[in-house]
Length: 180
Image (tube, rainbow, N blue to C red; front, side, top):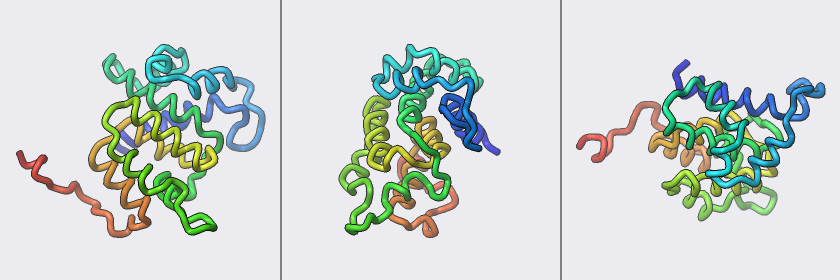
């Protein structure tokens, strides 16, 4: 298990701990609906100031203060998710054809999501995507995207969205930028 996988698992466990019900359906006595509500409404700065974000930061074992932005982004997006659906990759769930033949997240919105450059843009785009998926998506995959929005992750999301994951490269793609 690499560090990115472990971080996504930790973030998914953090999310589960805040929910009203455990995965088995029993009531969670330590649920924190207040934190979820605050984080759902928070911009990136407000999310960075939330105690639950600092809890996630500590659980991830991070020491570098610059990583607080990633933790806040992750906390803000995960708080929007109501139910975990591990049946498919999060991007594939967004591209699933609905009854009218359209993807859940329009191609234009998906392109905007992939092109996001700043954490605040990514927070907004990922929250919008989660809401369009009826707040039900793969928590672990969304957490991984929040914590590591690399070119490789973007590529993987594109392949998944267009249901071409079986054609996705398994090795790192060499581009002009990586050669220079």
